[in-house]
Image (cartoon, rainbow, N blue to C red):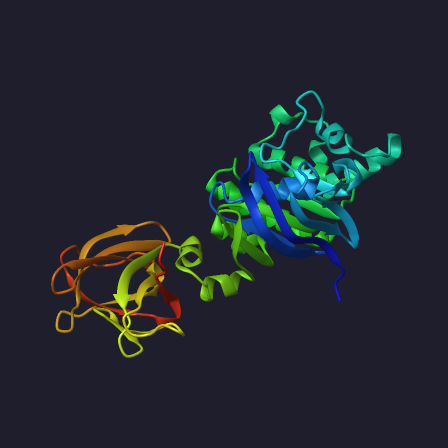
Length: 351
């Protein structure tokens, strides 16, 4: 069994009396990438700072490989934790070469430090740039230097704060693939912060979804995508259509068909129906049409279709995403059906 590396137990924290993290618990195992995912202000960076020892929790405990790192009355200093921290802005020293940046924090000095620095630069495919300076590097190269510096001391855990935020979309895809290979090869436990769900799904073994400092759902990417426990989680993992309904005889009747009521929902219960864009199947069918194409936009690998569905007293405006180029024209009548595996129903709770 993989030994437990980093363990958060019922963590509480606050700034100026306002809670920022409330009863958060999860763990990160050796060789595992766990991502904290959520909107700005949800507590992601606070958890990273607590793990690094830059903050002390107001409640709960943080353990690393069976050793207590911090609680409300005890904290081990950041430099004594064996934790690497890769900052969002990379924080490279402009007056130091790539190699000097990488070995800066090592306890070993001289030839031993140089050998370790060159080894980790080779692991990140940067050995040829050892004598270059940060201003001579591309954004992707700077990012990998920051990763190499964080990995150089052989930390038990590495903390990644929005590691791809400064990269353009095409470079981001390539760099995160390289980083994932490096992390897996090093067998370092990694805790990453992001607000990008696609990034989290690509990088992570497990994802912790946060909202207002509280854990909403934790699990593997496929489980969170296919089995979200709330409209908030479902929407965070892809664009969705949302509309309301009412339970009657265990069903919710809609213009898109009937949906099964969630367990425990009785007649009269207000519910929210969430349907992913890719869950809508579109067929040109004037005879059985139930929708009209308002607009179709090619986005490259997919097309976004705007649809209008009459409801009797009003109309429902929906979006569908279909692969590649499409031949649907504005104003054309179509029949839409729903893939039930990508449609979810959640009870509406009182505010």
